[in-house]
Image (cartoon, rainbow, N blue to C red; front, side, top):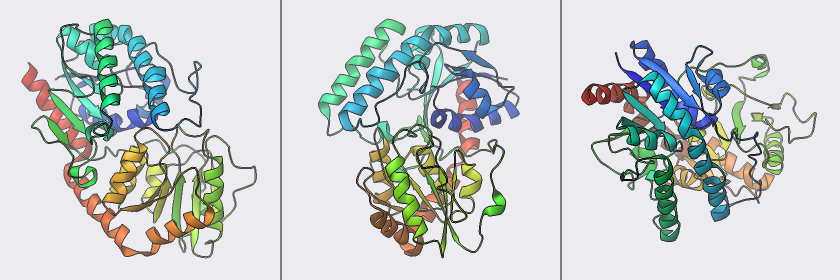
Length: 393
């Protein structure tokens, strides 16, 4: 029996992929624990019985961590790193150190944006595995931005000097022991790096609590189902975009029914009806099982979960890694891209018509689905971690 400590940022999209892997390891008799700045989030996603070591650190939506909604491009990247990821790593480091001392893991499994995990592991001489819950860092995001890449390297080196092993050389984004990537080259494209320690396992799709109150009886099996979601981190940016989605869906209500997630309540009260269901949260995986199209912000989890089900997409990237992921979708032919800030109901409707009625995007989505399912998902990820733990003894 081995011990695995999952170090994750307090972000739903980064915790969810690890949940199924952790559950499989626990089912195999291994010890599993978590380190996170938001223990309640981990217990909500992984189950109330999850062993979680709390860490200090800013939590989005609280602690004053609110990113201005109009930030895009380099300014959004700078805020992400300087305003969140680097302070989060420094704040989490003492808690991760304490978790390692108390739990004594054989392997630290660190999300690619939880830098405290790798740096503390390196300092203590522990083996660690990387969990790439988005593929932007692996897909040559900074190839055309050498100054940005150099800036990031300097900031990470400074962070290592403060909380890691000053003599170390490891980039905390990329484990030299095992890098789990929750995608496959069939989506990432030819730029996907290849090395013995990089393992493409496809999406980690596991059962999640569906939550109460979804009106399943209101779904119309006689119409195509379109799911609209901007994820959990963009609730403050999407009012105009969601309104355009609602208008495009209503124009097709004779043959299409929409389900719109509006966690921030940006749409006017009373917007929803039998043709467009508007809800603060939705059971995404269950809905995808019968969906015909997805409209989203090109968040990595949403894209991969849609393609796991063979569902084509309309992608409207906002910032961060989303333009990279949107490019992967369109390069593979599995969807259509629209401009988040300037889209109209007419343009969105045309994109919807393409993914609903043109067979090419659905065929491309099916090809990615085949690759995803063959990659093994949670089973393959757990197997790789078990082998790493065995080799590290």
